Image 1 (cartoon, each protein chain N blue to C red):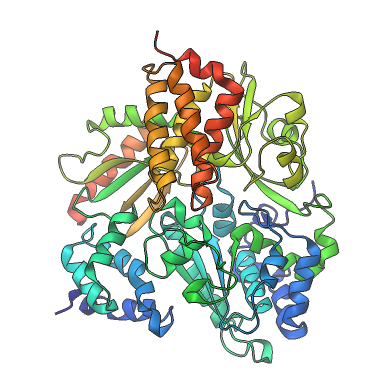
Image 2 (image 1 turned 180 degrees about the horizontal axis):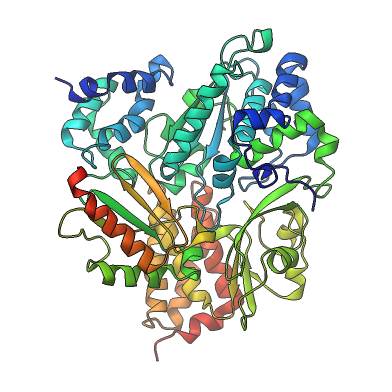
Length: 416
Length: 168
């Protein structure tokens, strides 16, 4: 396997130190951008790379950056480090073990849109990571890589961390902005979109940690280098978080387009002895369920191919379910999560997750009848398309696809 | 007299400097984290003081404290041991781990040990799915992760936390 591009600490153990990071080409991309490139050229290189958002939506990063209007100032860049999706633990590893590559990506993004103050929004549980980043930012200021008149130019940049306090919803970008502004983390009605009306009412780019960690390589080595890996429409490598019923759960950096089978059986060591794979959740608790037949297992994990089999790649948090898992139990677990994390702002999500949790609890306790399965399905379907943000929509995915593909699991638990 | 301002003058200035001058309210979460460090929860007095520093209504602060799960509204254990039982952790035995741990410690989920040192809680995803069973410990102005746990290792750690009484 070739050297890691994102999880570089696995090849270069001490890369979290500034000296080691710089000795391995660190901040060459940032220097090249600020000292030798126009902001528009940086933006264009990222556009050419085809880098897509690694937080879940898969939207092209360069295109997102280009939406910021040039007649409204200041601009802001916010890094989304609110990683909270059950099954996702990739950003945490990047932040803990390769923090400068992430920070450099944020700095290059800031230069590309000419932001002078950028923020890192971390989930509250990443308390120690926030302290670590504060220390790294201070080191960069001392080294003259952050601050005024960088590399002898007129460009100045400051970075700030902002610690959340335990709310999944703050990973939704407009809720995240509300949280930085000192409000409860509840999503905003859109439009206007953050590109025009974002942080403090100003044009704002919000990117996931892993997305930003891809940027230094693109600027230092060019977009063609980035495209050497992955597929035409989903270029580059991706950090796949593998969890659930596998022998070797963990993060695996692989080219987009690697098949589920390769990830689960070659890298993840397969399933425990005597167990068979039953289903896959490729995007954490928010996934539409995939029945793990041969066709599914041989599907390449890129945005288009996973969509083609009725699910989404999302943040590539692959949860494996084996034949000992009852799907109704799994659905109850995901619904419980979303009920707890619903922000309460819109009625379909607040009430829908509450009722879905009541019904699934009845089902797993063996107190439900056949009519309850239909009721659950009906509640979920009635929420779809009606919630203010994606969280509400996500809460219905496992429910609807679980009943569709594994109805017998629900019926098995029916009261007699 | 604003005790918070007296106690943490430099920290508060540093926090305020991160945000635009006319957006002071952005500092509310950092200041709540600061206020919670010592008592382990947000006192009514602290809310009033933050309201004064940031020139915002105290009811807004109360609503923020209520919204975010890491802010506590009342005194509980000095340490919150928070076990994740979400789907990926549950697939690695987190539910059974929590049940046995509670049995071992002799408290139920949500309860505090009789010495007031440790509250056991069930929480949502902590981004440690591959190393379940796992939990975090919140207390003394810090949050630490503990992964790949067994009931024995967790019980020993909790005993260690309870022994820290003298250091308080």
